[in-house]
Image (tube, rainbow, N blue to C red; front, side, top):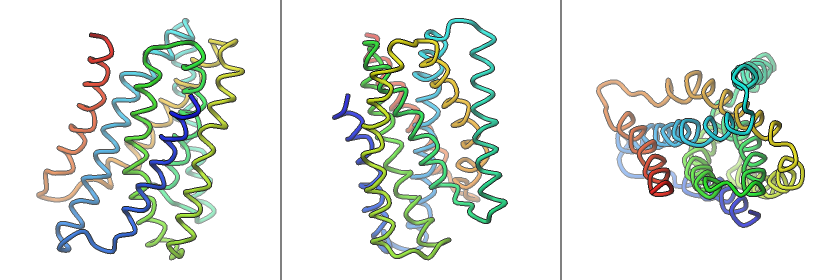
Length: 233
């Protein structure tokens, strides 16, 4: 579990390192690639919600109404946090999405491993796959909006890496004895991710008369679907 959570967190730093590259080809290619990477991460997030977080969270929580309530509370909580950041002029959609979904997902991942769920490695892979583009876009965002030095951004991302194993350990030791809490955390995270997808990631990934971002989202979801089908069969 610690290895899986550490590797998924390290993908944040890896994405940031790729984001250090000044330009990945001509200006039009660099712009389209950034939007496509953003959309790919959105597709992976959708697959994590649809294939792991909601099914596993519902199974652990059991009852329908509490499950729906946890999902809605997640969306409302992420809205409130983003609104708070906006009021304090600290809007950083990509970095905020990275941080807000990484924490509850790592907590849920630890609980999944403790419960012996077969989908735990798949969720770890999906978290890593989404952290790569989120790290890439968060680096570009912090360089553009906050004008932070590159080394400071990379050190900040490196500091986030051990957060995954720490939260995973909390989930391992606590959530395994409280399956309803584990289910609520997973559904809470799913609700927050869906809010972030429609509020920040999907609108920013669109480009006029360009289709690569939309295809990137399809590819991201397809990778999650492939992992789920390989797991089942």
